[in-house]
Length: 68
Image: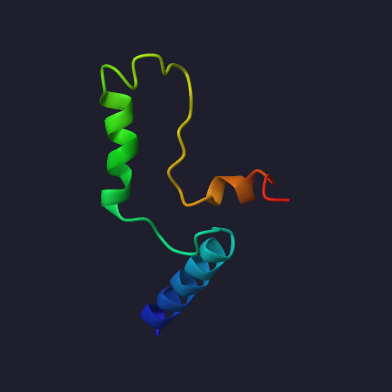
């Protein structure tokens, strides 16, 4: 019974996250590669300092209210 409760709460949490994510899915590890390469690149990332790079399918825009 406790296991079913945990699964229900997890499903509810996933539904909440998806409702706030414009791409409506979780990302794949392969989708992080571009951001990592940008930051690691001695040319492309050489002038990037003190920034936050969100790779979250748009979740942060809804959390910050920027989707309105």
